[in-house]
Length: 550
Ligand code: FAD
Ligand code: SIN
Image 1 (tube, rainbow, N blue to C red):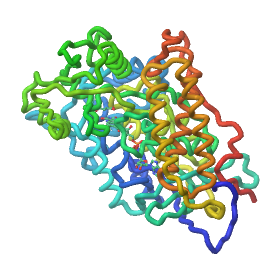
Image 2 (spheres, rainbow, N blue to C red; image 1 turned 135 degrees about the horizontal axis):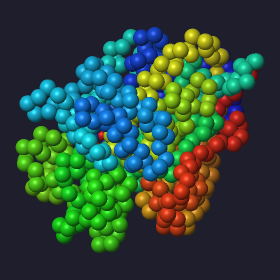
Image 3 (cartoon, rainbow, N blue to C red; image 1 turned 90 degrees about the vertical axis):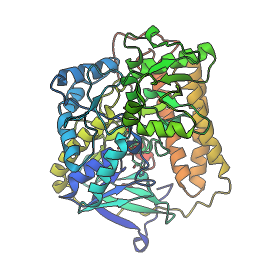
Image 4 (cartoon, protein in one colour; image 1 turned 30 degrees about the horizontal axis):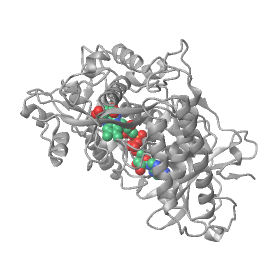
């Protein structure tokens, strides 16, 4: 509800499901497919079905698939990359299930790349991994995985997919005799119908992806506005480690190229990072050079760009044969060719960009949040896997493993959850059409720019303080705007981005050390003790969700 509630049973736009899955990427679709045989499931996507990060994933999925590799080695690499903050039980839990997760994808038909003259899958390498363990579909793994999941979902009975449906806020209900409030659905804005509907469900799953669009330069699609994190926070859930936003070291630098990633697998196959004068530099920063964990590579590039006054550095794979390059990296080759770069001969101009949200909604190993019957899976969640820095290609794996584990928990609990009561309809009686949409566009740009400048790869307390002051002003303005005008997609996303930016700034200010992706010039040392930054919402009952009492 926006501000007040009026119930007119004649006029309620309500849809009832057993399970409402908000998000249609690898996490949401996997969970929905695993559940749908037993239940009535709705899956929402706020844009077209392909507009999540999953579709754009390039490198692949990390898993223990080679006889010479081991669970222990994958676990050790993940923990080493994570700067002392990974939850070991979670890492083990996920890595142990990596083979089963891949076997399932192979069973449903994902066309992974095979090794030359062999029936085995080709495994590539990326930063932080001590073995070749990344299974992939050339350099467009996300497209191969997502289209197979989508085809499977579309032919699964019991599962209904809704595109252009954006969840605005969660609905909660308190039952007599029950001490815990439960989640019973969401208010959902249908872009095509331009109205808000009630989606009621006995269980709700947030699978809304990350929040890297809080930054001016990002590898992510526009959908990555942290909606799930903001909704869960407003509903009273804890949010953890938001200061660890990962910057991918190599996005294409070209005035016309928006958000195009140059996969780390290029470095896995020997590509070198060089200054514009051709000099290699990564060996000065880490013994693994180009294959050091991402936080180190991104920071080294940032440092060298500032030192030599360049807007980019180069990534060079031209030492490999043209045949190898076009076979393994067809997407990168074609995309670069569009901008006149022949990667078989030319170095690629690259810059770091915001890429992945390591923090998120706190969940247990079943994906359960602090709010009863609300789950969170995939990039929106915080499981403890990534610690202070995610190792490459571990995120799709996390999506798959937690989707399965949450599906199992939901299947067990669903029979005992009574259907929800009718929630009040969305009240727009006191809002008008906006006559100043420029406010949204302006605030959106301002937010992403100061997050980039003040809460980026290298931080100081002073910069964080500046960001803090600005976010407070923006929050006030956005709240006012939200209370007075009809909602739209852009307004919903801006409101969420502002909330997530506030959580990132707050967490970054609280961390008085440098660890993994959080690097502060004021606190350059790493503390001896590793502690998560856990934010707890206060007074959450008074916030935007509706509480229905008997
Ligand atoms: P997403 O795939 O982002 O899906 C989110 C879904 O939620 C979308 O359907 C969106 O429409 C929907 N949504 C969001 N908000 C709302 C709302 N309010 N209402 C309704 N729906 C909503 N990871 C790897 O492991 N390997 C890789 O090789 C790799 N490469 C990457 C390359 C790129 C360019 C990017 C951007 C990321 C890459 N990652 C990779 C990270 C990985 O792709 C993501 O972490 C993962 O796909 C997230 O999946 P998800 O299901 O959690 O969310
Ligand atoms: C990449 O292909 O470089 C992205 C891999 C990831 O983000 O895990």
